[in-house]
Image 1 (cartoon, rainbow, N blue to C red):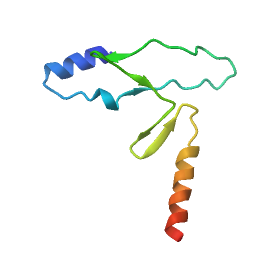
Image 2 (image 1 turned 120 degrees about the horizontal axis):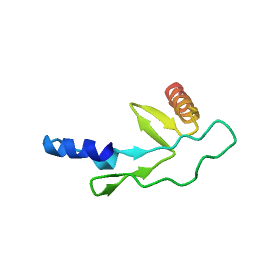
Image 3 (image 1 turned 90 degrees about the horizontal axis):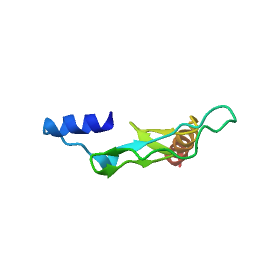
Length: 83
């Protein structure tokens, strides 16, 4: 699907910024591990990187489905605003 999207974007003369595209594998809730390694995804000739967290519209999305980083950042901002 990524290759089809990339091909269509090129066909429409649209920019496709592969440096901003990341892949994330969400950890399963159960103790069973499905797999530790995954196939490499690519858009055109550029390999997409796997990340454990990324920022989307100001919110930090994590592979653990917890928002601890977001809460810590907000607390830091409030602390700085008070002092």
